[in-house]
Amino acid sequence: MGYRVAVVGATGNVGREMLNILAEREFPCDEIAAVASPRSTGTEIEYGESGRKLKVKNIEHFDFTGWDIALFAAGSGPTAIYAPKAASQGCVVIDNSSLYRMEPDVPLIVPEVNPEAIDGYTARNIIANPNCSTAQMVVALKPLHDRAKIKRVIVSTYQSVSGAGKAGMDELFEQTRSIFMPVGEMNEPQKFTKQIAFNVIPHIDVFLDDGSTKEEWKMVVETKKILDPKIKVQATCVRVPVFVGHSESLNIEFEEELSATEAQDILREAPGVMLVDKRENGGYITPIECVGDGATYVSRVREDPTIDNGLALWCVSDNLRKGAALNAVQIAELLGRRHLKKG
Image (cartoon, rainbow, N blue to C red; front, side, top):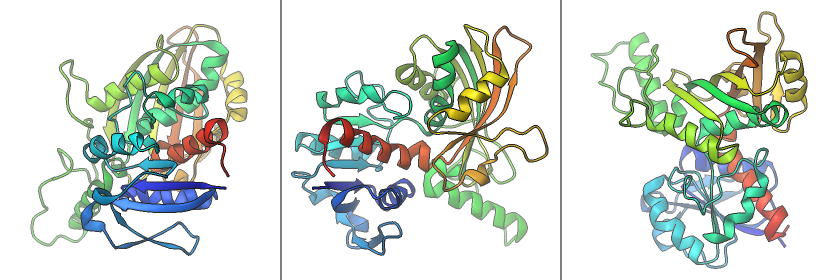
């Protein structure tokens, strides 16, 4: 017997990717439901490359009773309304929004990093999916932390516009087209605070009192919750004119000595990591090469001579996959193996 799975927010970028990955990984579904807002009700959406099409159901009328798992990709507003409803009706919610991540009684899970934390899901029947940039970073950090204990991480991100949803992708496309095929004046930025085409913007989410942005804060507190509360993290998050794929430059300080060669050996065998690190032209991964893949790619591993026990590395991943949809499906698989035991 398989699972009954609902994907909430199924018509968005992440929701569609969730459906694709469920089909691609042959998640044992006896029944799959695509659920979205009333304006999408009745439209048809593909269930990956299975050949099946799903008719979208209205979230306002959807009854979660009898459903095993709900993958939420609907944003914090709808999630605040419907996730507790689903959980109260016995359906385990795996939420991609930021709403529940820092709740102490809600597990925040990256399966390659802290699978045992999922055992706490029964407190509220809700499991949180981390921020896209945090997810790929902790996958790369975990095996190194196990070996040499990380003291501090300085991270600069280069985040694609798909992290801001379809509107972000549309804005980059329209601005780029306006530059190459000018017809009248370019529209003022709507989704971003400045022009994103041929530009970079050091501002993701709202500013906080200390001068950091909420995206930067998320990376700090989520890394502590998932990996180790003792790790110090400083993040600078930047939006770049790339459609899909987040990149990160990491500078790591360890308690113990760890050479670049040993770090490469560790990363080469680490779950979820793909090491591509040749010291030659093209011997590294860029975001365009990671699209559609579930791995967290690591390149440019090297020792940092400016601090004791320091390493620097480059980390790239498809933010719609490992940063969101794939991690959510992996959580569902983990939940099935450890607790629900169907399929």
